[in-house]
Amino acid sequence: MLSWLPDHPIAFPPPAAALDDPAGLLAAGGALTPAWLVAAYRRGIFPWFSDGQPILWWSPDPRLVLFPEEIRIRRSLRKRLRHAGFRITADRAFAEVMVSCAAPRDGQPGTWITADMQAAYGRLHRLGIAHSVEVWRHERLVGGLYGVALGPVFFGESMFSWVPDASKVALVHLAAAMQAGGGRLIDCQVHTPHLASLGARDIARPAFIGYLEEWLGNPPGGVQSGHDVAIAPAWSFETIGAD
Image (tube, rainbow, N blue to C red; front, side, top):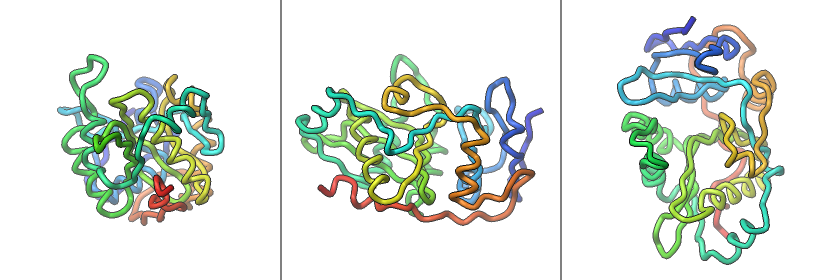
């Protein structure tokens, strides 16, 4: 049965209570405040819903993750990294990255990155919790990604490319910065061939939750509530594109 959450206090059912159909749906309701979002990510939960729906919270099993040291850079991508004339930055155009990620693609007229979601993650960005990586060519934003950084984990939300491989270039630079600064894992949420081709792999939800409990200090099991404190990223976003 789907759990319906009040606006207060912050309380999530354990991720193991997520439904099988639709797979990974855990709860509805709650709020998109920074406290709710940080509490969710620390427990392996994320929001995903469309306009006209309540806030829906998910914790899929298995979970697609990328360990930064396992990123796969094929020859064609390596050549693009060297010769495509890209300039890489971080946290220079967070709102623009979200807008680009929300733009219709592949014939899909709608997006789950709604105005409410953009406002919510904009608040997280101003608090230093949500971050973006941008790829530029001739002063034009051509690719990027955004997500939430807590301790050694980056919870990826979305990425986009207006030119070939630009989002991959952003991910490569993020993974390099994480390796250099002590980052341990990039959460990719659900399986896609695009991310699997870059070295991401599925792990069981209990294993994923175990990593979060070890690295972020989550309380074990049961209904979890109360105020969560964001943990500063283990690496510096200022190093991305600095070379």
